[in-house]
Every structure is written in C-alpha cells, then in structure tokens.
Amino acid sequence: MAIAAMSQSKNEGKVRLITLDPGHFHAALVQKTMLPDIDPLVYVYAPKGADVQSHLDKITAYNNRKDDPTRWKEEVYLGDDFFEKMIAEKKGNVVVMAGNNHKKTEYIKKSIDAGFNVLGDKPMAIDKPHFNMLKSAFADAKKKKLVLYDIMTERYEITNALQREFAMMPGVFGTLKKGTPQHPGVEMESVHYFYKYVSGSVLTRPAWFFDVNQEGEGLQDVGVHLVDLAQWECFPDKTIDYKKDIRFNSAQRWTSDVNISEFKAITKQDFPAYLQKNIAHDTVLKVYANGSVNYKLFGVNIKLTAKWAYKAVAGGDSHYSVLHGTKANLMIKQGATENYTPVLYIEPNKNDAAYEKQLQENMETIRAKYPGVEVKKEGRGYTVIIAEKYKDGHEAHFGRVTEKYLDYLRNGNMPAWEVPNMIAKYYVTTTALDIAKGK
Image (cartoon, rainbow, N blue to C red; front, side, top):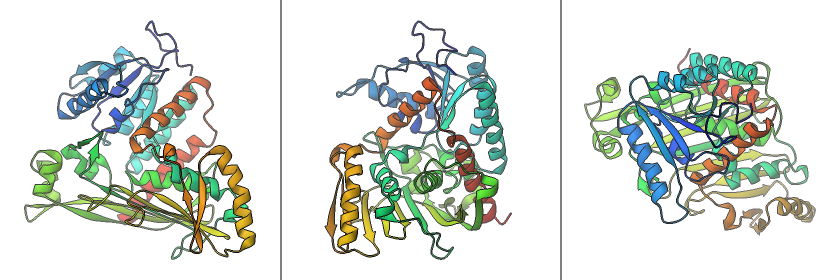
C-alpha cells in the first residue's frame, strides 16, 4: 500500500500515525524521535484514564526536552467508544498499538479489516485463540496490501546483530550444532524487572500489567524477542513453515512474587479486585511472569527462558545468549564482569594460529559493515570490542524499527520470510503456554 493511499491532509504522502489505547510506554518510544516521513500531527484514541495520560505526558516531555526536542501535536479523542470512533473517522493510515494485550489481537484484525496498516508492539497474540485470529489478520493484510508488523527492537542491539554476523561466517563459527534437549544448540535467557527507569523517570506501570490475562505471561510477552532472535540469528532470511519446521520438547511456567508495598511502588495503587485470586496471605501477588520453552527448529534444539523480578540489585534488564558452533561458541553475557552491559565473546573450540588467521580475515567483512568493531584476544577466546557509537540503547531502537517499517510501507519491500516467521514466532510462544499448562 502506498503510504499516501488514505491521506487527507496537506502533507500528502506522509504517514499519519494513530495511537490506539496506549497503555504501554513503548507507544511513546515510537515517537521519541521525529522521522521525515511521519506527519507531526498524531491522532490518539483511548478510554479516559491514567494510561493515556501517562502516554501524553511522555510525548510532552519529548517536545519540551532541551536536546533535540520533538514537535508532535496530539489530537486526542477520549471515550469508551474510542475504537469505533477511530474506525469511523479514518484520520490516519498507520495504527500504533502498545498496551493491554487482552484485546490487542482483535484490534489488529479489525484495523486491518478497516484498511489501516498496523505497527504493533509485542506480543501481538498471547494465547492460541489469539494466535489463530492473528493468522487471519495477516491473511487479510496480504489481500489488502497492508503492512502488519511487530516491533522487534532486539535486532538492533549491537551485540545481537554481531552475534548474527559471526554466526554466518563458517571460518569463525563453523555450523550451528543441533544439540540435544539437555544440551541445546541455542540457549537464550532474558531477565526483566518490574521496577525500572524509562526516559530518565521511574516507570509507573498499570495494575493490569500484573494480570496475565491482560498482559500475557513472561514467555508469551518479552519471550517473543527471544524466539525472534533465535530465528533471525540462526536461520537468516530462511522462511519457516511452523507446521513442518517446529517440534516441541517441553515448556514450563512459574510465578514471581510481588508484595503489596512493591506493587504500590510500581503502580501507585492497591491490589485491584481482578488480581485477588492470585494473592497469597493478603499481601503477596503471584504473577506467572516466568516461562521456558525447549523446542526444535529445523532440527536444532533451542532453549529460551524469560524471567521477571521486582528490581535489579545492580544494572537493569539483562540478556544471555549462546550459539554453539562446530568451530566456536558465540556468547553474549551481561553480568557484573561486563559491568551489566552486553558483551559478545567468541570462544573457539580450538584456538590455534589457523583459527586466529581465519578470524582476522573475517574481521575485514565485519569492519566494512561496522567500522570500529575489533576483537581482542583474552585467555583462550576473544572479546568483541564495540565502538561506543553503536551502543545507542534500547529506547533508540524503537526509532530504528519504525524507520524499517516506513521503508516497507514506502517501497513494498518487506522480505518474503518476515510474515511466515512472525506467524511461526507466535506459534512457538502460544503453543508453549498450552504445553506448560498441560493442555
């Protein structure tokens, strides 16, 4: 779809954003930077309440910041009929969705049906019924030549991008080991925290964030990033048929404890009635925020784990990842040794002069694409030294995803593998939930 197809403003050809019920701070991060293709007038449709006010406050802060302020103008409609109003008025051509996930898939489907493009935050489906609805939305988007895409920021984190680059170098990595369920060829784990800072301020989360029926469980929410990285890094540009290429070994889920004082610090309110069934001893909320899946993709055993805790002792959200190759392991760590920032290591199975020569030859390709990236020999392996200019941070990655999305809108050049692999991704997360629940 040409991005001007629904245009009615003087800014012909511009993307005109609609922000729908922005209950998650990711909706604001899409607008943290101005992009030339986007009209500064943004239409917001939401119910009245703290969620939309928090979103608007963030946009105001971006407009008023000292360095590189944005120039957004928000036209806001508040009311219980916000979704119907959005559909009827058709004031924009791209709907941004980042909020309560209980109805998100339905909103995606109905927005596509009404002729809107959709840029959706993860997760776009939190269980099997929503997965089936999402598949239908993708089919409808194809027929209507609309672009439905989810926000995969972790592809733009530099250590993840370089892990992928090195994994495509047979002289450095060899080939990906298939492994076993007990010793997988791919292992990834993310740890997130309920209490965190966003854009310099302590994040106030909505109470519904702690209701898995509205937010989704850990693996079905942030775990989407891990499934995406496993596909994107290990099988670049390869189309996945989820019915043939994926087989499950096992899946688990377990709770995180949040006491009443912690809950108040995060949400600024008491436990709501809809969470009472998950509260122990009147003071501790049990949240199914953790999950793990062990499965095979193209015969490679993969284990992915998503965890949540209240607050980091040091550092912040963290990521661990290892790809086991026949010549070397590619490992990302983010612990105390790494000063809580992600560091990529290359651990050769045999570190001799021949391997050193192969690595240095392949570094020419890396330097051509990422000038300033080097390797430093330490012990029996290598540390990948990354120039500071590439360490732009999680919040900046939303702008880069949006730029990619705009390119797909403008040029109709989304790779053929993207949609089937998005479908495969949500098949993994939603099937894992069923397995973990014993369904």
